[in-house]
Image (cartoon, rainbow, N blue to C red):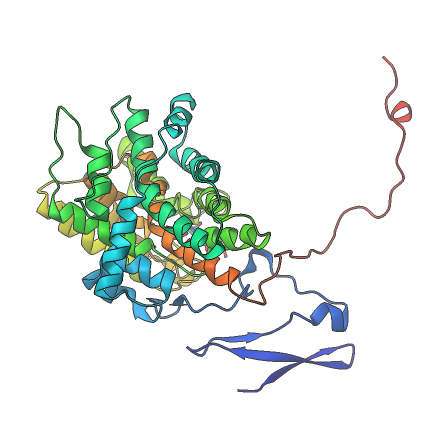
Length: 430
Ligand code: CMC
């Protein structure tokens, strides 16, 4: 591997350092390009731009590989808890028994939220999207929990608070939106069980925690825990680069995740399946619409910026879907529609040529429906899962001595210098 790449601009050669990742990923370091040549690079959507080096998550989009801190996501899905996965991402290694115990104690200790936060929910307009509320609530945490003296202690406590409180805030928003009594976190319950209990327990109908539902939720969260420099994680890093507090950076991540091309895709998939069912559209018609360049319609839950093969998370998600529905002995007509759509799309030349395969969101909405999560809360479930990844990436950037204020450049294409025309000359009096 050469140590430098050579760039020839108007006959003048420039040496650019080559950077190699531990899994053989190759990059050309252009950070001094403008200074040395006057040129910048143009990469709309950042498809070819590495914004940082990172030791958290490895993805190989061509071969469908995803690893957290080197561990294949399939192994974590098989053996780990979500708490362990969060610890792994944030601390860089799996916890010892004692570290796991202490982490659990801290998460329990910080799981309550300030009672005054309830009034926020009560004054939100009815029908507000839970992602907007969650993003605002996470930002508001900064005002409720004052800064500590010691920076390291403050960061550790803030990280724990975020992981512990996000589930309480999400469940609280659901209960209040339904006009129901809020259920408090219980220290005797594990992370996933506690969330399910806060969501679904009620004085008139005590919630019975089903082990297969807990397993499905654990897997859902592990599969969403990190995904390197995706849109919301980049938002967290970019916003964080201005040195805002961690709550504000996470709040920005939640806002970025909300969109239907990113974390809102799980909601969009279920809405798409619902429309297919309600309108009685044929699978072939849906596929034709998704292929039509004059129609903005897309097959939601299909395609990915990095994966050019089957998303490894989608494989596991499809299995969870089948297992959970059979264990609960329920049927979901959406699963049949989704499977038919997938089968037709994977044989279609357009989808084959464009490397479009199901992504994690294609089956995840059906899993969440089976758990009992309302459709508009699906992106919130993604956000709870992604939180450890956002925290790990924020911490990594803050501890990186080379991390700078993120400030991309542009190529200006607007008018050349133009003189201001005074108001009286622009508008005639009527
Ligand atoms: N249905 C139909 N055509 C598609 C789709 C789709 N779902 N996705 C991409 N294409 C086509 C697109 O029309 C374009 O065609 P052409 O080159 O002929 O003009 C080509 O594939 C490349 O598309 P792109 O939009 O330039 O690719 P991208 O890398 O910017 O997009 C994506 C990635 C995820 C935004 C896109 O595939 C998409 O919109 N998918 C549906 C939304 C979705 O499921 N999002 C969840 C992503 S996974 C969760 C996460 O991690 O965020």
